[in-house]
Image (cartoon, rainbow, N blue to C red; front, side, top):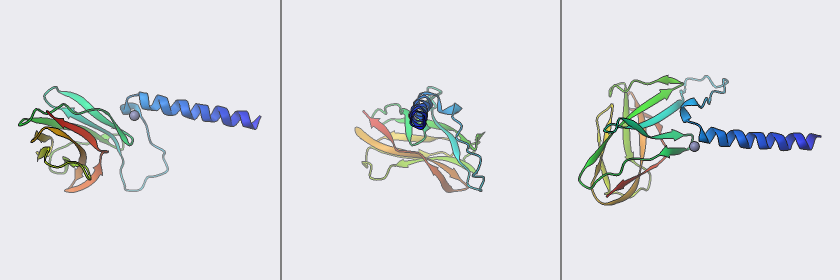
Length: 155
Ligand SMILES: [Zn+2]
């Protein structure tokens, strides 16, 4: 009897994990209730393509869904973000809270450059190629959260 219980429990956990990944991250509720220390948790991090006015990629745990628009060489893309901290929207005013972006550790240099404007960022295509970037949530000048690395392509 016990054996069957564990097998069904494992199958159930497997199913839940898969369903969790398919579903929109927006509905994911990662609140376990016990950790109410001062450290706040980023519950939603979506990158917005400001020209298309749509979410182009969002963080789901340790990985991304979606991707960044390709950047023509010599041009740039303009990106904003929708961020929730402890399930509450963070207002990116560029002062108290700001969006940042930088090269991921060990990523190829010379492909892109960055312009930070507080509430949004520009990624500039310097040279044809691919590299990896990370986005940052900056709170009073300190990087409070860094996303997983995300690929960016310059054509
Ligand atoms: Zn996922």
